[in-house]
Image (cartoon, rainbow, N blue to C red; front, side, top):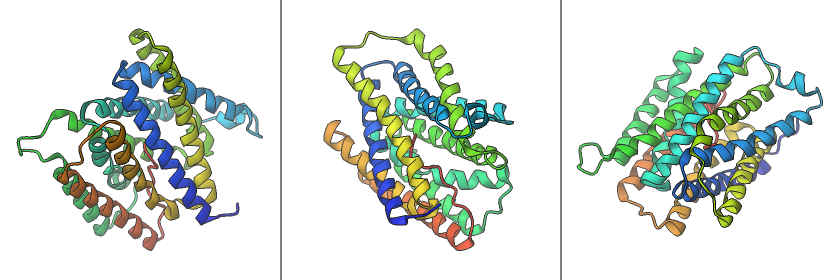
Length: 297
């Protein structure tokens, strides 16, 4: 496969911009409707997308989705359902900016989990970067400063769940094609979210039906762009640009939701991002595969 790092970088920037727009619609819709219902509609559209992709696979549908690790995929699907629901709930509770500031620790959590779960050797420098990232999160949350609120733990829990999802994904793709790992979580998740979300259905206004449709289509576009990104370039060359999602989300939060950008959030996010970039640098220097969680799905 021909690699084009420059094209991959621009695709990554487009990917995280679309993810940021998707998060903006999450914040808008979950602010007016039940979070479980909003996530359910998103899963319906995304599941339809992967089903269409499966039908177009050259090896045939059965071969494309065949897996020996269905229980692991069920666990991944459950993790992703809970993670997305929690982070969207967090958007409505503490806003986009603060949620993404805390969630930025996710790549560092992936590093921390890769040792015990994947058997990877983690250097002391990478452990140091994880510790620095944790300090950044503490700066953002400011526990004990009299301003801490429990909803700030929602994006932190989401980051841990998504990191575990990423590590399990790497585990399941070690000995079978990657499409099965891409296919099963949205399909299983759509079934789970239908069972959980349908009892919480609320009447939707005409304008918000349009927003729901755009929201679902953005989830399809963002994941399609991410796939094209990693086809065009190695993860190690494009992953640093994934942090631009924080910039785009901040712009959306300030412009459309009138959120505040607190100084401790800026400082803490900078610490977390620098620590995350340092782990990427170390991974490249050590010749290891980048522990890549991608943007927030």
